[in-house]
Amino acid sequence: MIFEIIGLLILSGGFVYFVWRSLTLANVTADQEEYIKELEEMSQYMYQKINESYKEMKRIDRIGAFEKDDEAGTTFDLLKNVITNLEEEFNGEKEEKIK
Image 1: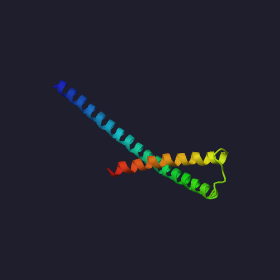
Image 2: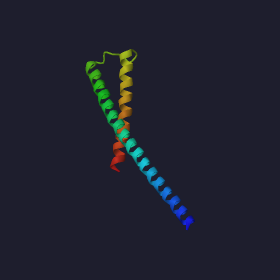
Image 3: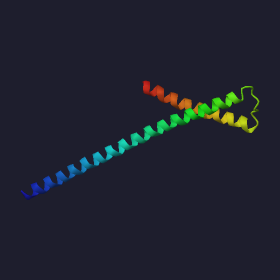
Image 4: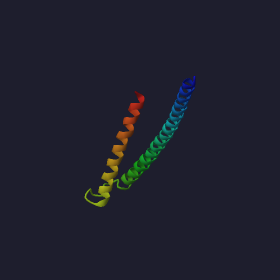
């Protein structure tokens, strides 16, 4: 009789521990999903700002006065590379979500 009671207590304790652990892990997962969403929103914001800056720089240099060898030309190239990489990343995510 006493062994049955001890066995039930051990099983109950194990059950309570596993329920507590699963709830803790669920909370951690929810926090991570919220963090990922915030990162995606920040990435979209940064992409928009970089794209606006690049368009403004192209507007300013509409006649191509800046040469690629100088600092302004290098900045144009760097911004264009960043925008291209961001577009590939965001377009890749959109295609995955559609599937």
